[in-house]
Length: 84
Image (cartoon, rainbow, N blue to C red; front, side, top):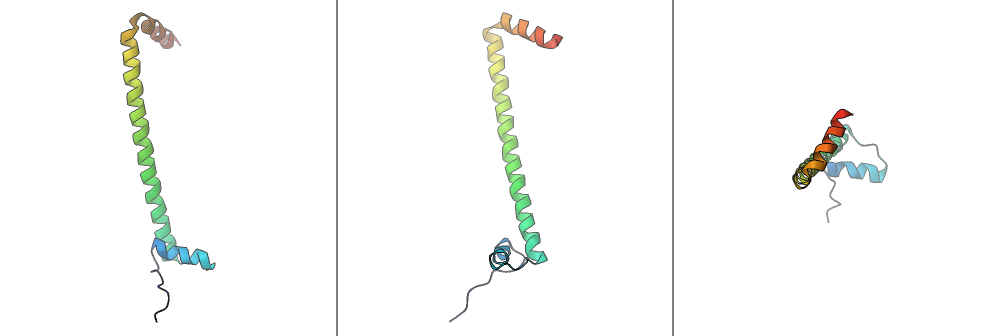
């Protein structure tokens, strides 16, 4: 009967047994873990940026519609803001 399968060093899966057993991670496993974390952060940053862009576009459309519905009030508020 074969023993337990040991994940390859230099992979994210290889990093976890180091932590579970308390053995310091080898350089290859540390590098793989760091690369995975960088990729995750980059993906999350792109998603946040897309969400902010979507929100800003919706906000701009809403302000445009308010200006069309209430042109006099919009003109007064705009002048006040430009004078600040």
